Image 1 (tube, rainbow, N blue to C red):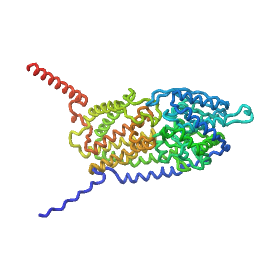
Image 2: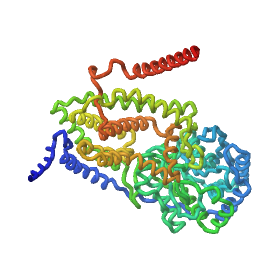
Image 3: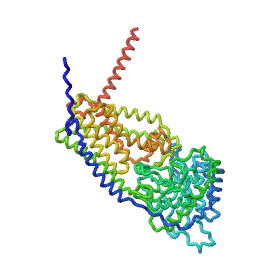
Image 4: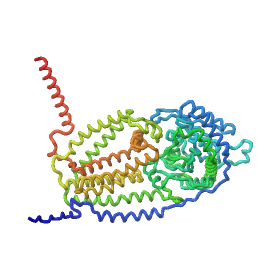
Length: 628
């Protein structure tokens, strides 16, 4: 008997519940992106460097001697220690013969993993004809695990030589007009602990500062580098960066490295830097760091005095010291205002304005928003109610907000190492360890909360295709709202959200596909958070500990609270979409579908019933024992 040919499966009609995503609208809306891209092209600037005020006269021999002496005689300079006090006295003694007074700025700060420590900034001022200031920084401390020869005996030595070079001898004061700006040389404390001293100085005396130059690890084997990131989405002045680039190239013959354009975008999306320019840039002060090392300092076993002597055979320290000296002169004599503030991204010798980059990122939202609104309109036309789907999302949101509140309470009670909201040094134990007790407590509390929340989120009947479409639509609309709120907080952070927008938008279209296809789309949406973790891992050498490090930054308040709340709302969206993809979604039950007792009463009743059963069992065993 012949088997009749199988009837081919008809493809669902576009716009039907099986194919609800308007692919033509999605593709067409991408054309709008051409407008902001064109505007970004017209926003490109090519800044000109400030002219050189005088030829370099940096005393390289003195700087090398000072760096070697400092690291040899004062190797242990951990903040608050006896060695730190002796190092501060040595610093004062190097400036006293030149008539330069050193003002002490003592303060305390709490550092995660180290507790509350005493710090002392040392401030030297050379008065100029204006009260506007140019600040030169170098941190004096180390972690106490090695001599800190390159990081940062070299920066401290260069700071001393620069202060000496701008000192005006009393006998010739009438003949020398002095600088236009007031020059301030600050030997900071706590630079190895996340820029504690620089943050304190920026917060207390950061007004009327036109530019900040930070000197850090000047004699490393790597090429010269400029660090530009702030602790907020801001950037230093284009003129300052361009002038520093030219001055360093003139002295070294090498164009200094800057973070790549992609890295600059990540630094604006998640503002973070271990260098001491960061707190100034975040306060709209134009600041940068001159260094020869990457994002993290060398391990203590490599940053030794013997290695420093080898490195000092290279002229790099003298070259960068001379570049810093001429950079100060250019800023002092320059007429252009050096204030920082509006962000930008450098491409070679050109820069794209930050507002243009933000406009491109916002335009990348439009295809998603257009299709999500179209999904909403389709549900309205088909009279598919969205209320139960929205309430299902709100239940998940309430769960994640509860988890966030529990995390904050556990952190406040000391479950995580506490400290001021500053970058945590990657060498600290707090950057690598999970507090097991706090994690277990949080997991248990979250599990109990989920038992309560899931009571009204589990399917009790077969879910209709239209109800699943409503669930997708509600989740995508909420995801669009989250993305718009991200724009209001920090538009650059959209780089972490856009992958989820454009991957998860297609989940309703693939609801009839195999589970592995839906799982791949769902996982693709997590590319944004994975990118952040990968960035921290690569930059700081944390590896798998990058998640613990990020959680610790949240615990100390370094990550802004609005962004944390938006991340929790994003997790609630991912939870609803995961339930839909796994066929475990159910709309919020109506009054008729709900059990007579709510989840809390049900949980309490179940617990009481278990206790009563145990009591009866114990009583029965006691009776049998008495009868025996």
